[in-house]
Image 1 (cartoon, rainbow, N blue to C red):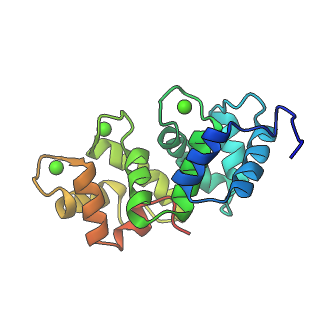
Image 2 (cartoon, protein in one colour):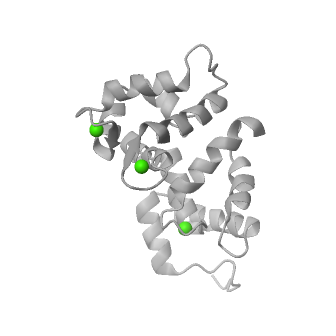
Length: 188
Ligand SMILES: [Ca+2]
Ligand SMILES: [Ca+2]
Ligand SMILES: [Ca+2]
């Protein structure tokens, strides 16, 4: 109460909406907002700012996270305007760390669907799986990403049309939960 600086005032309607969407407490959201705005006063985070900010929230080494953060940026940027605002960040971060498996997979799908046409093709999957290999420190010689993607497709591309719809992707990973270790950048 009484704190009326521009930085700490958050539209009450937006705050309610964020509480509903993320399940976080108001105080937690306000604290996140403060942290977000101190990293990015304009409330429009570009790729570089996002890398720095997201990086500070993860435990992996710089090199490992580098590639994957690029894909995560695209997934968090829901309106595809090339910037991440606080709402996009909070929803993305809260859901990918605290959401249900299905909610998380919705974001994972967006990580893979680079051109946002609502399906994942082999090429899109190879790009992200390669970055996941880096993140996980997995050897490309033992099991090349291309082969891995072929195996994933033969397992979950149910209608065999060489692309994965969101349903095929989410249901496929839910049915084969071990896949999520390799596929999802949001596992602990
Ligand atoms: Ca955006
Ligand atoms: Ca696509
Ligand atoms: Ca398909």
